[in-house]
Length: 336
Image 1 (cartoon, rainbow, N blue to C red):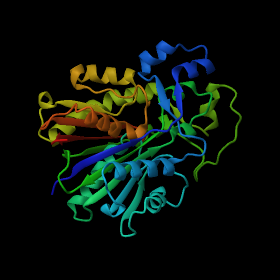
Image 2 (cartoon, rainbow, N blue to C red):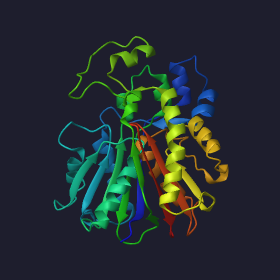
Image 3 (tube, rainbow, N blue to C red):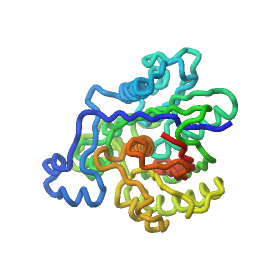
Image 4 (tube, one colour):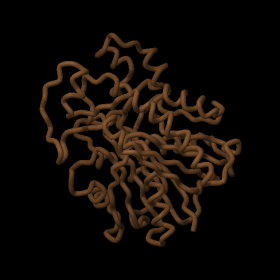
């Protein structure tokens, strides 16, 4: 039994933070330098009273409205988020209720970041192969901006908020999911972390005077950029090799490469290291930022709408980051 992506919807919050606004707060930075290095001109940011569940509901409603679907279409909801509304209950259950999905539908959160879309596809594929589900609503929703301190110019430059909804089905759709490769290495957990706030460490409440104090407080997102960069350069080539091998696909037969949209600087290095032609390598983050688990479905949605893909195209998806964790798969595009 095959697993297919039938449709994708994308929700971006109305509020935008532009490079010009960031330079207004951090005059030592340059607008052009930000755009050239990270490849982002503006990023969407959730409103103060807008949370992951709200964005997830909006994405789910958009998917159903755009495709004339009713809530009883779905027999499972998978929600990927690292910014849940509460420790418990699971945010997915609240979203199930608000979207009016049937109570016979399962609902589960997965706490997975930049590799989260690939992990969610793998779980959906397994549920369909087992005969447990036929139509799955897979939502990614992140409000990373709420993890970031206002003085953290580095992370504020990179991350944006977004939600996406993907209809995954046992019935034929616009793209068929191939074999999935997953991996993890928790030795890198300290390099991308919000240390405080869960059971192991309470919020410290330490006053942040300067950006360098953010890591010592532990209350906000900390990213060790150089270590994340080094991890990516080591892990992604192995991931690509394993993904191609599992799908019996020679690299030269790949039509498109869709990687997690971390930032332009990192992706340029990866593309060159992997010897991928620039015309096959899709970048799409300029007006939304790094939206964590939502980056890959945002690229796919834009590519579907712009009719970038042709029938029979082979599309490699690759997600990697926080955890550390990574995942890859191949989509075979069918038709619009």
